[in-house]
Amino acid sequence: MVTQTSWFRRRSDVRRWTRILPVIVFIYIICYIDRTNISFALPHLQMSMHLSGAQQGFASGVFFWGYLLLQVPGGYMAERWSAKRWIAILMVLWSAAAVASGLTHNFTELVITRLLLGVAEGGVQPALMASIRSWFPFAERSRAYAIFKLYTPIAAIVAAPFSGVILTYLDWRWMFIIQGGGPLVLGLVAWLVIMRDTPAKAEWLSATERHHIEQSRAAEGEPLQHRGTFKAAFGSPIVWLFALIYTLTQLGLLGLSMWLPSVLKTAFHTDMKVGLVAMLPQVAAGLAIVLIGRSADRHGRHTTHMFAVLGVGAVVLAGAGLISAQQKWLVLGAMILGTAASIAWYGPFWATVTKLTPVAAAGAGIGIINGVGNLGGFFGPYVGGWLKDISGGYALTQVFFGAVFAVAALLVLTLRKRLREATTAPPVDTGTAETEASPAARPA
Image (cartoon, rainbow, N blue to C red):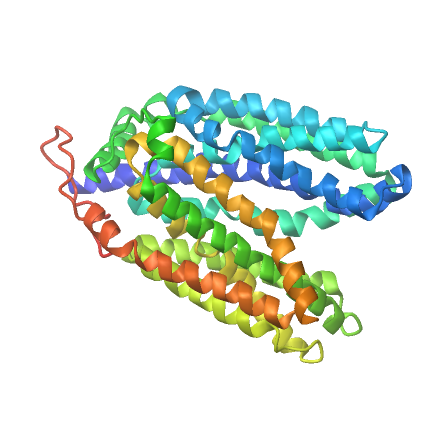
């Protein structure tokens, strides 16, 4: 029986990893490119619409105000209604907004389309993350969320040449239209064909495979049906603790993006192509995400993995201000290590979120954590700019953002006892005579 169960587990694993996750990652790569491609269009928009520096900044940042609106409803709708239908609707709306950005003729129209793009995209990530929770038991969730987070380095590597080719042969309007419409059609078709809300509805899984997936989740103490409420999410202390940790990590990430890229460009502009060098940190980040996620699932010490990664990030960020552009290989090393550390904690973090967040707060709670956390990305540049102005350089700014990462690392340690208790709790009775030992029952 053990051999047969193991065989079905391998088959269900392969199908989940090769069908569900690739579609989810592809969709969010498109989402991330549509979010960030305005940075490539700004020089052209400046000439075409005669935008001032302040207008350019506002047009870029207004996306995040719209992005906040559907964060909480996004996770809620995915769990209470249908992630498949909800995300399909949002994909159509975001495609329309992205294409409309290429049809604008003035600053006001551009701001409106970017705001609407943020609204549509804001509900997508919480819903996708709720879907991952439905398809992967806790013992596999760090890897699943880590693979999902690969959209960041992949999009960073793909976006620049993709946008550059379109801008070279066409113009900024076609860039918005092509990137907003073309890839999304493929993503929408793949999503509707492959995705199902739960394994129980996946006709491409056998009944035994579906049973194994659901039995694994039940054995770890998780209900298969979530009926969360907004009240439970907003009233949950653990949700707000996670939101604080996530906000601090997003603030710390700003320290990396404010200083190291500019120094990297200065250091390597005469020795090798900056574009090639800039790809190395993204490749390293992709490897680190997967390795940390896999290690957390294998050894079960999620809080230890998060603390170690965030601690490395804190040291790199705090010490980055001491590195000069003349120390080019040290700059590159710091960039690689800092970029990897800045996001490699992602898999264990969200796995822990889905394990410790109360069932009634699950869907909406993911939205609160992600939405509040993104405020760190909005306010970070202002804090960093203010520190730079009063100090006359980046050293103080880097120390501040390094300290922010350190605080996040310390807060993670407060989760250790709770996670240990949650992962060693008696399994839920699944009604079967034979149940494999839960792989989640490991040290936190």
